[in-house]
Length: 400
Image (cartoon, rainbow, N blue to C red; front, side):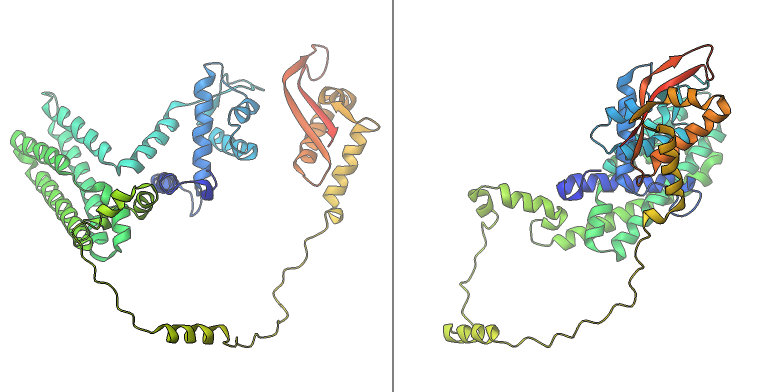
């Protein structure tokens, strides 16, 4: 996510809305509280990763290539989100074999991200229209059974109940600002209600035994209509005689005031008459008040008090025994050299058992920022049938 200070109001609101829907959708999958994505930057990184895979073709990408393709985002954030996506099988290996370096993205998670962004923009109206259209097609099919239609009626009843309840609560007790932000995208759904009513009538005519389910749907539609009317009435009452200014976001009016011409700004006052204000104080009284304010004595400032809750100083990295041990290990591996390849270090280790310990040490050294040594990897590899291991990825270990 871009720095909030560099975003416009509309862009920041859009990213916040996507994150809010993301949390709601995946709340049913969370293992525990706060066990899910809690920042919009992670969602943006996921979208960037999927976009990189989309442009890569069927050959896939390595982790380093994904990081390079997402150059506009911090590399560490891209790597972290890549590992999360890989652990949930949203990103899989091109070929399921050991040491496979190329990955490809699956289709379903990206569709979910598109769905979440569209849901945040339309409030779910488009999805309801699609659901009603598919249900009506199924109802018109001669092979559709009453059990299928009963299930569809139950789903629609639940959806409209879940829509009407929070809107009614917002309309009755929430602030007008919250009502504008949350309920306004769901207003004006006469077409949606008409579609649901036509489906209800067709289901009741074709299967009279479904009248109880149809009655529950009809009650849910009535509750949804009442909540919309209550919300719209409160917004209009709040607007009053100000030409419904309260129905628009504050940022919209600020933009209009900055970019509007003199004629457009003056047009807002057409038909209004203002009386000239009468002065409540004389000039001498105003000057005397200002002088008294300038000479007012400031209150006594209490002396500084010693802080008793100061945190203990951070531990010195030199006192960390693991850092000292890894530093000695790095010096032992490089010796007098400024740089060595991973293939050289594995060859010096001898067998693969010792080589695995070398790789483990190199990784541990690289992950500790306090140690001035770095491990970097390339895209190539060395193949030698007589060596152990037979192939080694291209990599270098050097003093940073």
